[in-house]
Every structure is written in C-alpha cells, then in structure tokens.
Amino acid sequence: MTLFEKIIAREIPAEIVFEDEDVLAFHDVDPKAPVHVLIIPKRAIPRLSEAKPSDESLLGKLIVAAAKLARDLGIAESGYRVVINSGPDAGESVPHLHVHLLGKRSLGWPPG
Image (cartoon, rainbow, N blue to C red):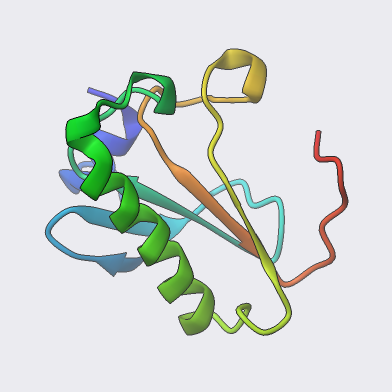
C-alpha cells in the first residue's frame, strides 16, 4: 500500500482540500510553492506511463479538479502550474499517479 493509498484510507492524516468519488486533493507536506496541492486518483495507477485507454475519464477528472482548485485557492488569475512526474528521472517519489498544482509565486522555466 502506497503512502497515498494510506491517505485515501485515512490511515495517514492529510490536509484535504477536495474530495469526490474518484479524486482526493490535499496540501503537499513538503511544498515547493506557497500553494502546492497534490491531486490523486482514488484508484491507484502507478504512473502516467502505465495509464490505459480505460483511464481516460479519470485522468480528465484530475485535470478538471486542478482547474477547480486553482479557482478555489485564488491562483487562477495570477497563474499556476500543473505537473505530473512519471518515473524516477522525472522526480516521481510515490508510485501512485498524482498531479501537482503549484502557485502563488513566480515559477521559472525550464523547471528542474
């Protein structure tokens, strides 16, 4: 069971900011921006590279949740970044697909 599955099961506490039947979003415990929320599917997909055509709707829900949270958290107007890391070279630290929503500061390019 991954760290995120334990958060979904409420075995590990998290500061949850959004939840529906398919998606859970919570503040990152090691934020890289003043707003740093992780948006995860409740059904585990190890990483983006392992997503299947049957995951299409769920992946869309993650992105729509990111846009909603950006509005709710007051970063939609100033701008925000949505990041999905897939694999160790990309910085993936938990093998459970997740979307990072970052904002409330200027974000440089390129990242990394």
